[in-house]
Structures are given as structure tokens and as C-alpha cells.
Length: 373
Image (cartoon, rainbow, N blue to C red; front, side):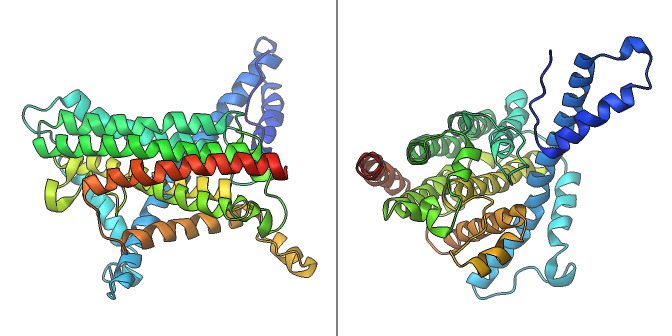
């Protein structure tokens, strides 16, 4: 018998609705297996629409937010002319990207050239499908969530390497090679921090990791293990920033040196897809940090019953996105505060400092679990 995997209330509603609808069909079309298949397909379409809505719908908001954060950090106004405080500027940019001519440079491998932006989008979309937004809102509640996230993150590197190599441009190729070396290096630290979370929570399932932080703020993993939790959070923040190719770790682009890096030859919609992938990755990494360290969809309770009761009245989905946007703001503040290091300094920081720190962190975390339980 076919067993659907979508178990949230929306999925249950669809599974109850489909047999009621198929009851009006001829007897030949009525079967429990067919109902299960149809319900699963409808739920799958709903899940795809939901993931696309969260990712693609958040990108224009984040672009506007980043421009305003950048402007205020640099003591200026940012976009102001289109719409109230420039709120329509991002929409104008999207329209411009959609109508710009799309072409590939001579000598480029056009198949790989146009496939690369699609590959870059795979990882953030897949990660978003694993994130528990609330107790009843998760697309894929898989038991091996963390290993799957570590595995699919490598797709982004492949897309960037293909984009730079297929462009037939030495600046694009150099930017792609830089990016490949950077992402692969920092992916090691990124994976080790996630393994630290798995070790202290005792589960690879993202929902279980979130549930293990139920209680007050002091039960969040950033605070639950003294010092080590906060250190792990900082290491996650640094490695995820580098893994996303965001400033100050954006040596893959480095406009002053490489024109535009791996996407120098891209224009129109393909360039917009690279741009979109960066902001979707910003959402998914912020959501992952929220899930692993900041209590996920749980309210920031403080242990005072009167206050906690009021905080718990707010839906978990609201708390989750509030924490996500706080993390996004932190990523943006770092981007517009620190200067870009040289490529050799960036690689030295990973291999000579961050990786040893993560190894010590894993050892200390294991020791803490053995000693303190």
C-alpha cells in the first residue's frame, strides 16, 4: 500500500478530503491505494509551492533590507525614490532582470553555462524543505536531516565551478576556482559544527533537535552548554558566511580583482538566479542556525510564568521567522562592517585556526557529555 510522507495538518486534511471527492467517481476509480497516491501528489505540489513561496518571496524583501542596512551602516539613505522609502526599487530591478537580453559569450559551453545557475539553486531549496518552521509545518521530516544537509550543500560548489569554467573567461575561471577552494574548505568546519549539534542533542533529525531545546532561553543550545554552545554558534556563523560567499569572505567575486568573479559573463535571468541563490542560502542558513542554536520555533521564555504565558500565546511560526530575520540582520551587519581579507589570509584562517578550534570543540563537547551527562 502506498504511504504518503506529508504528515502535517494540511496533509491530513487533503488525505481526508480526497476519499470524499473520489466517492463520486465510478467504482473502477475508487481504491484506497489510488486515494493515497492522489493525496500524496496534491500534498507534494502544496509543499513545492510553499518552499518556493518562502524562498523566492523572501528574496525581494531581503534585497531591500540589505540595501537599507548597508545605507544606515554607511550613514546614508539607500533607495528612496520608487515607492515609499524605495520599497518598489527591488520590484523594478526584478522587472529589469526579466526583460534583459540573455546571451552567452563566444566560445562558451552553452549547456553548462545555462545549467550552472540551476544547480546553484538546488542546495538552498532542499535545505529549506527540511527545516521545521513549527510543530506542524515541515515539508520533509527525515531522520537523517543533518547528514542530508551536509551532503546537498556541495551542489552549490558544482554550479559555481561549472559557471566559471563554461564562461570561457579567465576572470570567471579564477573566481570559480577561488570559490571552490573556499567553499570546500569551510564546508569542513560547517559540517563539524553540525556534527557537534548532533552529538549534544543526540539526534540527526531537525525536529528532534528543536524539541530538545524546549523550555527557557537557557535550554537553547547556544546557552545550554556553558561557553561551548556560544563558541559553536560563532564558528557556525563564520563558516556559514564563508560557505555562502558573502562579504567579508566574498573572494570569489572580489570586484577590484576579478571584475565580477564566476558570474562576470552572466546577465539577465541567469545572473538573477545566482543572485537569488545567495539570498535563499541566507534564509536557509539563518533558519538552520535558529533550529540548531536558538530554540527553533519555541518562544524565548525566561522562567517567569506570567511572562512565559504571554510569550507562548504568539504562534511558533512568528517566533521562528523573528529569529531568522535577526540572524539575517547579523549576517548583513557583518557584511557591511568588516573588510575583505586576502585569499591566502582567508584560507589560513580556516586551516590554521577555525578547523583546529572545531576539533577542540568536538572533543570538549564529547568530554562534557561524558562528565555531565
